[in-house]
Amino acid sequence: MIVLSGVAADTTNAKPTPRLYDDGGFDYVPIPETARDATIETKTYAGVSTRNGTADEYLERIYPGGGEHAVEGDEIGDFPLHHDPNFEALTYGERRPAYVKRLRRLDEGDAVAFYTGLRDASGDALHRYIIGYFVVDNVVYFNALDSSEARERIREHPENAHTKRFEATNELDDNLVIVEGREGGLIDEAFRISQRTPSGHYYLRDDLQDAFDPEPSGRDNRNAYLGGIKQAHVLRVGVDNFLDTIA
Image (cartoon, rainbow, N blue to C red; front, side, top):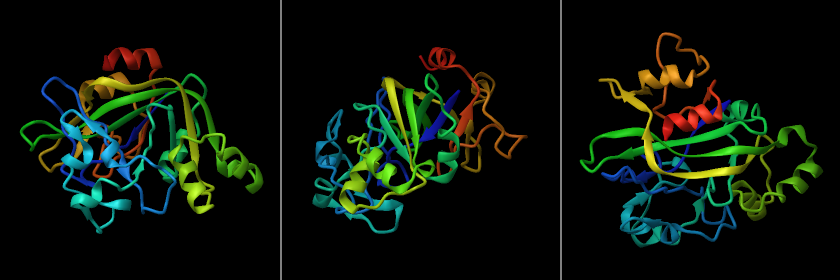
């Protein structure tokens, strides 16, 4: 089983949308944290390498929390990331209910695949692309733990962005799920998974609808919906077959 999760900065929290390069390469740009004091994360946009420099040089504005307030100009460089997923540490946390519902079903040996929005060099062709994956080592669902155990166990994941929020605020979201990986990471070339309707909506490509076999999600007469706001999906495909498809 694979959970397909939408992540990273794109149209809802950064401008411009990160680039897809002609050779299939891309820049992974995490979303901004909700506020400067919401995390102990020390990595900022000035520390995110891109093909042509750093993310703060590329971005014109970011929207912490996905809201209307924009951070612009020189202030972007020292704004903290919500570094989630962390592909170096292979850790990923979620609190969005529709995502948590799917992620907590994962077992060791399953996988999470991560997709985001990228624009090609023309600047007007945005699509959804898989950019990385984890093979699951373990999953911790904090709602199943009492308060004291949850506070103890979250510190077992020091590189997770939600642990860094907890250390800054001493507040723990009891709907949180943390997925730890045992292998995987960013892939070398982004893999396009979307087709776009004339109305501007994104759906899973026809060939991938068959190959990935997503669970129905209320739109039985259509392929899996990929946003708007990016949706999570359960793909009924084995990890090896999935990796062969995106290779």
